[in-house]
Amino acid sequence: MSTFKFHWGWGIVVTMSVFVLAMAYTVYLTLQNDYILESDHYYEDTLEYDKVIQAEFLGKSLFKDQFWKADSLGNVSMILPMKIDSVKCLLIHPVNSANDLELAVVHDQNKVRLLFEEIPATGMLWRVELSAYIGANQALLRKRWKH
Image: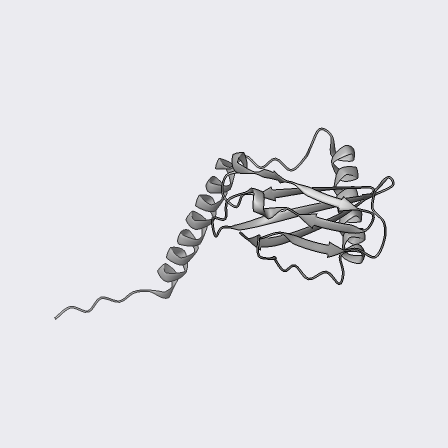
């Protein structure tokens, strides 16, 4: 009867070899990806991002106490705390951006009505981007809406 003795030195060599091979494979996998971490227009991109953040901050104060409830036709009406100059509403499709829609909006002073009745109800969860303009400032509200 023969017994096989495994020396502890060989265990260390095998473990270190497996570790080095795993690290080499990890480095190989990371070199296969093309990471683009810089932009040619990083300053302009940052300014645009800052405008969106500022618009969302103003939107939180403008649309703070608004409850979205559809009437019998599917339209949503709201009264805002201040007068607005213009309104634009986009419906962003959850899957295909080619199906994005601009929703008709009626506004008068501080009253806004989103005309959901003009598009067919599909039971789909849309992302609504409602932009209200007050002078040169934009107030942006992003909300999910099932229609």
